Length: 407
Image (cartoon, rainbow, N blue to C red; front, side, top):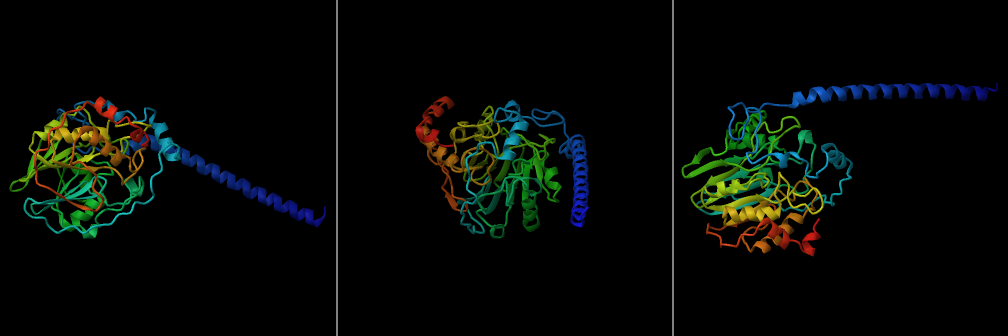
């Protein structure tokens, strides 16, 4: 056999041996990965489950998990109507038909006043459900999230709009309201930074103090209907809404979700947190607690199939305007939109649809604020009465080419 042919044969055999070794190593790795995945299916869910609260059963707690007294079927089923596995597969593969969002939205951060005294009120939307409200010498912050992503270990939806106030420019915070433990509302990194800097009073609902406490931060947890005095003439009431909670897949509803009323001499603040419509009685319950000068109402993350106008966990503009009306609020700022891409509607669909819905109902005083732009909230005055419209009537009014074109 010629020498060149022998050399080529040896090289071929060596290459085949190396390739075979690599294939065996890959196969072994895949088998190990498969075994670990199967073990994770059995072990991890129990490991990730946490019992955040122990208490006696009650109207919205069964001794194990919390529930909505008006029913949970609409918060459990998938908003797309399909399977959970199909939903996540389409999301992860980018095959869910979502309209394109901008990668970046320009924000001009502001530097808020250190204090706003007397009955003057200034509200600054920082992004998503984070709002700074300043009045009576008190600095109040709702669901503070400054992290780049909303999810565990740095994963999850990334913000397209930077916070409207840099954390270093934020004045000393006296009171923080945390509505529930979803990552886009409870950011432990941010809470820890604010706690280390300001030691504010942090109020939340039952069980969430355990989650926040894991970050070495002290929070006070209250049940729906409980109230706590913050300062003379200033009191917070934890109020009902319609939602659910989880940090992982297996700890669902181990902690409670809520909205809040802040009692103030010049009129109350209502922070809706994250909510679907449910039976809508939670709106009446909040309105009974006194005149609402400023309401913070979510309008985004409501669409998961074309034309959808609301889901069990999130209201859209068509329901938000009814929440605003039934609260009897003098002013409202829409939140929970334009920061994290959580659903299928386009980036600017919520405010455009809100404007159309407000025109349908003939209401005023509920309009978007620009991220980072301080808004002076005028003194409370009863809103002008408007004729109530049923949801069907509101949907019929919104059935126009312009609204139908909104994805």
